[in-house]
Length: 138
Image (tube, rainbow, N blue to C red; front, side, top):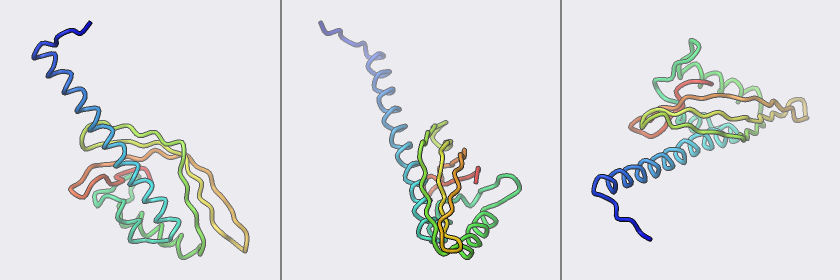
């Protein structure tokens, strides 16, 4: 048996479906940023790494320049690096703000052998004119 939706019921159902679709799209976009960060680190590509960080980044007294400079030092210190994140949860707060919690494994080759670090992080992301960018948490 099919029920007929009132005009307001139809509008409300349509709004819920659109919000869900927008949210899923935002989650996919945030995942792309975080995956691009993993790839940039694994490839030791400072330009690609910097492109994932918001120009307005500010957290624990560090801005984007400090975060990028720190990663550049790691790139200079280690010729081989591999970054892999997993166990990621993305929360879209609103159309401009998101949070991501994930674990990551960073491997570096040091003195001929691989060493690895396993960490959990919580990142804040902000949607800019250029798309989602990491704005805090590194």
